[in-house]
Image (tube, rainbow, N blue to C red; front, side):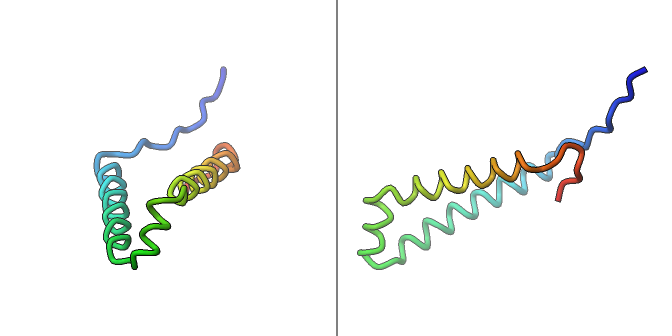
Length: 76
């Protein structure tokens, strides 16, 4: 008989809402921070691919972390 590995529980509504609220807070914080920057810094953010670079690097880091976690290891 094949033994089944125990599956971790799936996130519930509370966890999903916490992540959603955190994501919205981060975006609003970034918008507020950008609005108080000097004009030169605002131009750097809005007229260069800085945002795209940050998103690509962040996504790459996240995918790397996910791919390097050994199977069955506890989540942090």
